[in-house]
Length: 125
Image (cartoon, rainbow, N blue to C red):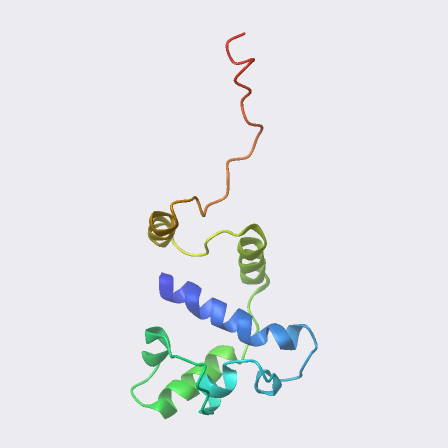
């Protein structure tokens, strides 16, 4: 499940400049990792994630798979989910992933329950 979320985030990030009409194609955005991951441009700032390396046995296979991954825009629901998590500072992923993040950060990374907080002064009335 983690892999699906991470790949969606890759797509979200790489296509952000296109959605914002800053460039027509992701490879045109200077600050993107797309050039390294999809086209093999050397970039000392890029350290490949294991998930990227799992896209293929060779560099060419990985680049081809990455280009295919980024070729299509995310579904509106996925954009909403990612943006909602970003805007609220919440983790995006499965429950086990969120448990792990909460253990490391020692704070909640899930949405708070809806409703008003109980007032301790009036609870006993």
